[in-house]
Length: 154
Image (cartoon, rainbow, N blue to C red):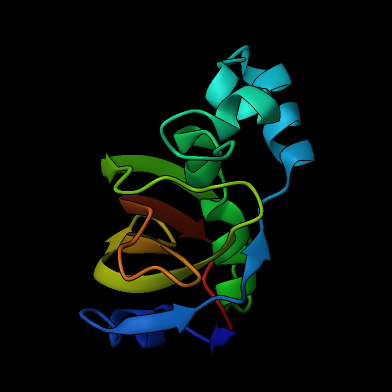
């Protein structure tokens, strides 16, 4: 985990890969709960038997499930000590570049693309989040994520 002690330390990392997270495993239970929460019950996600005969040979995670892991990747990949709070400010671009079969292990590479002050005491960061699947050369999701932190770190 990368620990920042000030916003100037964050800004000094623009253009750099800041963190590579630990692996997390995608389970069928996660996929089913995500389907329940979002109403997306497409068979390629929630019907393992039918999905085995489908185009991916197994059930796959929803693209938006993969995207929803970004906060977890940030939580485990970096911290800004002393910041009062952090918020998701949005996304500029998202691509789901490969399927995520259930049972896959995923991790993220977090590259800081930009850091700008936000009045009165915050910072806005633009992160390139590249989600990788273990054993694959191609990322499964690439997203440009905007985050804001407030409260000047000590």
